[in-house]
Image (cartoon, rainbow, N blue to C red; front, side, top):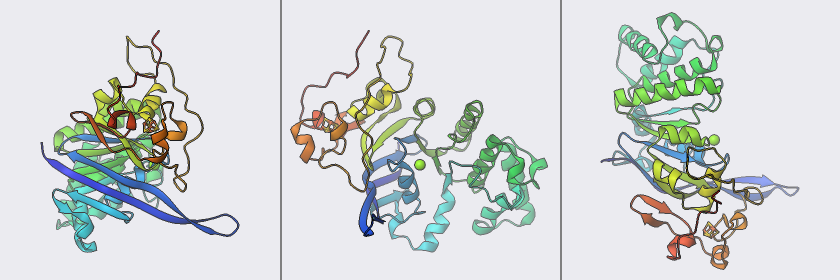
Length: 333
Ligand code: SF4
Ligand code: MG
């Protein structure tokens, strides 16, 4: 297994002004994120809205400039690349956005939208380019017939197919999909997901799949990183995460969805309070004010990443201190 993407100590901080005196406050949207994505896998970033998962995706592609950290793609350190080089590397790394309504220019026809990346990045002449456009339209389930139509003439699902076609047209190795189906009707979601899975098989794609939707994550990803307040709190194979979540936040998150666990009836864990602001994160373990297992140390010390078992890491003092594994805070009926 080969590493395609490695993300080390990635940070994205930005300043906002707040209150009557326009006080400057630093928002730690992404705060020391570490993970690797292997070639051909689908790696998920999951968490509630505002946890920093989209910003992580954008910072990897340098659609937003990271504050600190290292991102390597196929061994190349992206942070050291001059803008032009980064731009040419981008053809291997594409993004599919959440909102297919907002991400397609309404004034451009499908032909124009799909031709554009080819003009910027490739040496094909017009005829070859058009052939590419038609073939990618067919691959995503549309056709030549749609070439001169405009985004508003399509349904949400079709628009996301166009968004995917745009991402695919330069034959990338890696796609970051940020909530690619959350704006779509449930009935359409699985069609788009199945399309993505087929494309992955056919073209050997690697996905970074960003979502808050746990059932989608469970269905289509190989490994998962759980984010809370700009940090990753747990990483595991998808199956292990769903069967055996370790971090108290992950346990609470998973308890909120009906997951196929015939034997164990899970009870929902209701966390106290709301997610704090990333402008003013709690000390120590940032989850401590809401954690049902918080200890004294949690208030002052940030837990390190501990390997619970191979490939399953968790950032929580319950594990790093080698305490007895906490029993699932869930009653069995
Ligand atoms: Fe809860 Fe402490 Fe673990 Fe944080 S480190 S999740 S507060 S037990
Ligand atoms: Mg988001």
